[in-house]
Amino acid sequence: MSVMDDPARLARAVGKGTAVLGGLVVGASVLGGVWQVGVGVLLGVLALGWAIGFFVLATRFFQPQRNPLFPRLLMLSNPLKYPLLLVLAYFAVQGGALMALGFVVGIVLPLAVITGLAVREAVARGGDTNHRAQVYKSTNEREPPP
Figure (cartoon, helix red, strand yellow):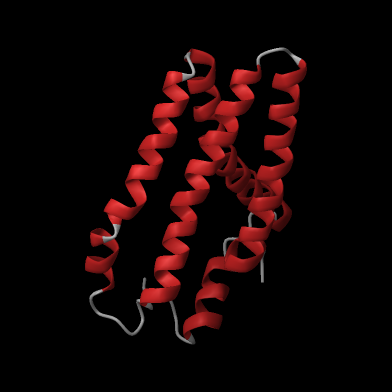
């Protein structure tokens, strides 16, 4: 099974990649004398981590497989999630243009890591177009729809 097909391995790989890239960006910004960018990156990574972590916790506690009201419960839980995100964005904007730029970079870092992992896996597979059908068969034990 590939990294992209296993959520636990994907989460570990994205966490490690984001920590390494984030550390490099924060270190470079501090050494370059623009510490505001580093603080913005930390705020951005924290904001995206909070959103993803909140969804993981909601999925674990509300159990969407057994609870038909899961989509409604997830929407009703937004007042718990968004105030912290708005506070983090507010702090980034109050820090100035450099901190806001760092915030955007912090949001983009995990997405860039996921994209890099997907590209690396596609290149390693060498354009195997049959992989999707094999994964579908192994998980559902039937043919994919035409």
